[in-house]
Length: 110
View (cartoon, rainbow, N blue to C red):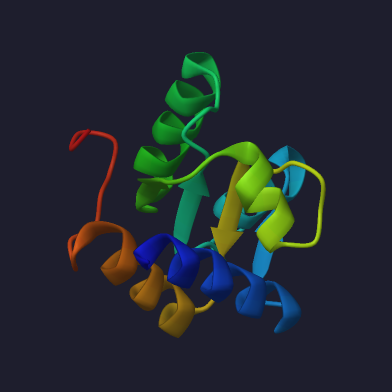
């Protein structure tokens, strides 16, 4: 049930223009200081996960791992997505609560 709420929230954030998806857009969002949280699909390669965790650790952006590429993409009206950044405090806070029971996750926690 929480999964449906997370994916619905991502779709809503997409329609509101409050998220970026895809490798280049997500990286620019983090480096530009706009990303409040970065979400990675659970089936993202280990090398990509490490790269994003390192990037987000440097820029102090929480990293969450959730679902899979196909489900994330479908929630956003795209084919596949392995990475998404949320650029709105409200959406980011709700996303963290839904995926972690209210705890934020960074590279050291998983």
